Length: 234
Image (cartoon, rainbow, N blue to C red):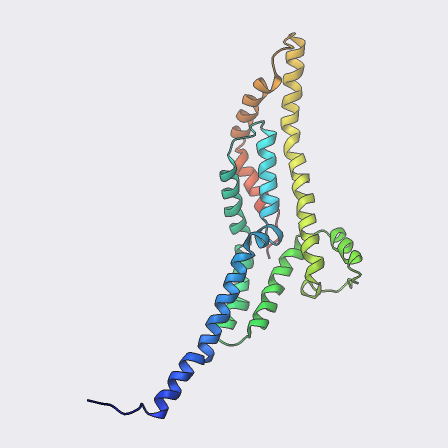
């Protein structure tokens, strides 16, 4: 049995379902998601706490004179979980103030991006030294007012200043981590020299003592606690 053409209202609804705002919004979300996934390694290194954490944990391994333990996958994995722990409050504020209003239609994609940058820039500036900010502001010929807010600073100033500040902080923490183990190395070397054991490598004797001291003081717990508490997230 032949049927006639569908009513005009049904055709109009079909066209709207194919070209409506919902489908366009979904396409934009997919494009943004793909872009973020492609930039994820750069984002992880430049605007999160990952850089400081992984450098300090690597310093711990070198200070203990066990260059292959823990292995790199363990160091990277622990750094990622600590980064997630540190960045949790920031991600929560971005979700509440940027993503949820965008999903409910209160903000456009541009407005949501601005809100997300406001929250992220607050974290970056709070954990960046003033000297680094002024250094990159001078190189970019940008004037920083005394009452300037974090979101008012350009990204090309905030991001490199944050990375440089993270490197500086990580190396300072690494220096402090090396000091007690350096004392152990000096004591062991002095004892071996006084006993005339010139052919015995001091590392063979000092490494067990380093591991013993590190375990007795709960070294990994102290390092992780110090790393997490060294960031300003509020």
